Image (cartoon, rainbow, N blue to C red; front, top):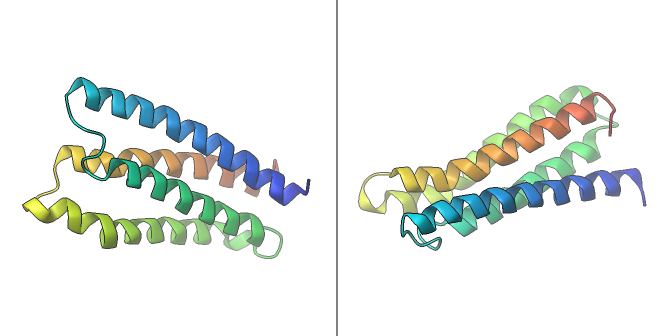
Length: 131
């Protein structure tokens, strides 16, 4: 297996496991509060974050050899794209009642922040040539 493929596979599996764990905790709390996991676009939020993080990491790995000094900017651009996707597709649904509530904000922020943390850890590994 090529090194690039292995890097992406390891990242995707670890990110998926982390997201499933956080989703389990998140949905458990919602169940305890008697709130459906199908409200507030919770499931699409986790899925979208996962695939956008994979895309960003894939781009980072592919650009590593040729543009190592620009990876930080590419990473920040990827985060900007993720925010853009959420403001274009998720925010209008969240604001249908006039405000974005705590449950809606949490549905967006938990998977976003988790993916951001995992992406940052792997970007540091890429930059330090530990991957």
